[in-house]
Image (cartoon, rainbow, N blue to C red):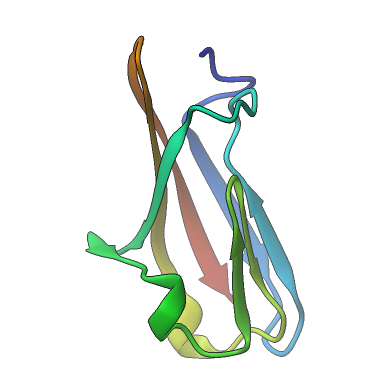
Length: 91
């Protein structure tokens, strides 16, 4: 499980537009993936319909100012763990 890019990515996005965050690891069925925002785990069961998590992808369909923050995908498998962080700025 190796990252495809740097583990810290900054994204600037206009308010009311969409953004996709792709966790930069090679997908595999044995991966355990947890997304968080500002160190709080994101539970797909409790997210607004505006936010979609599909394994290595987190998509915000229409951004708002309160969507800004530090997002993190933490990926674990039998070989260890790796994470990527995304600083999202809403402009």
